[in-house]
Amino acid sequence: MEVATRLILWVVIAVLFQVNAAHAEIKKHVENILVINGSSHYKEIVEGIRDEVNGNLNIIEVKLKTNKELGCINNKLSQHKPKFIILIGNKASVCYYRYQKRYPEKDMVPAIIVSSLFVGQLVKHMRNTAAIRYETPLPILVSRSRQLIEEPIDKIGVVYRKWMKDFVFGNKNMAHIEDVKLVHYEIENKPSAQSVRYYFKQMAKEDIDAIWLIDDSYIMNPKFIKSSIEPILREFKKPVLASSETFVKKEVALADFSMTPDSYFLGIQTASVMMDILTQIKESNGKANEAIDLHSKPIEPISMVESINMRLINTKGLKMNPNTLLEIETIYE
Image 1: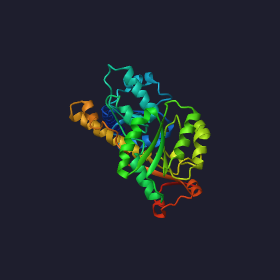
Image 2: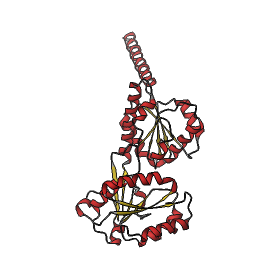
Image 3: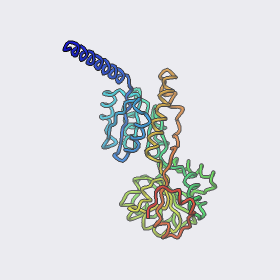
C-alpha cells in the first residue's frame, strides 16, 4: 500500500511538472507589448487594453516621470524586446518621438499613440507609428452641442498658438460640414498672460455664437486661467465648448459642454488597432511600415463621454433640450 501511494505521488508530481513546463513553454512564446505610460490618470485605458488582449499578449507597463527619459525607453526595449509599443499621453509620445530622433539608424518597433493631444502633427515626423485622435473634431462637437443647446451655434471663436495652425485649419475645413464659420485668433507660441487676455477679449467682442476651448496646457494653465481667461469668459453669456472634461468640472468651470473619448473604450480600441497592425505585419512578411501606412492618418475614437456644467448654463440662461439632456453621462451642478 505504501509503495502504491508513493508511486501515485510520483506520477502526480511528474504530471504537475509537465504541466508547469508546458505553461512555461507557452509563456515563452507570448509576445511582449510595452505600454509606456506618461501619467497615473490613465488606469482605465490600461485596463481596457488588458481586457481586450485577454492574456494573448504579455503587457509590460512602464511609467515615465518626464518626456526626456530616452535611456529608460532604450533599456526597456533591450530588456523586453517588445513586438509593439503603446504610448499613452503627451509625455510618452513626445519621449518616443525624441527617442526616434536620437537614434535615426535604429529600426523602430511599431507603435500607437493614444490619449495625446495634436497627434496629427506628431505622427507625421515619426516612423512606424499610428495614432488615435484624442481631440473631438469640431464638426462633431458642434453637431452634438446643437442637439443639446437650443441656441444658434453658427459662428465660433477660437484662440490658438501659432504652431497649432494646421490643427485649427484642419478643423476649420471640416467645420463646413456643419455650416460653421470659425473666427480664429493666432498668438505667439510663448505668449504672456497679457497677450492671452488681449486675444480672448478681442474674440469675445466679436459677433460670435460660441467659443471653442482648445486643450492647450500652455495657455490653459492655472495662472493664465485665473488672470486672463476666466474674467473674460465670466462675462461671455453664450455657449463655451471644449474637448476636455477638465474645463467643465466645477473646480475650473470654464465650458458649458464637453465631449471626451471614453478612457476604457479607448483602451479597447487601442488594443484592437494594435492587434490588427500585428496581423498585417505578419501577413506582409514583417514589413511594419506597410502595416502602419494603412493607419497613417489618426483614427477617430469610437466612444465619447459627454459632460455639462448646469450651473454655468443656468447662470447664462441658455435654453436646453430636455430630451437630449437625459442622454448626458456627467452633469456638474
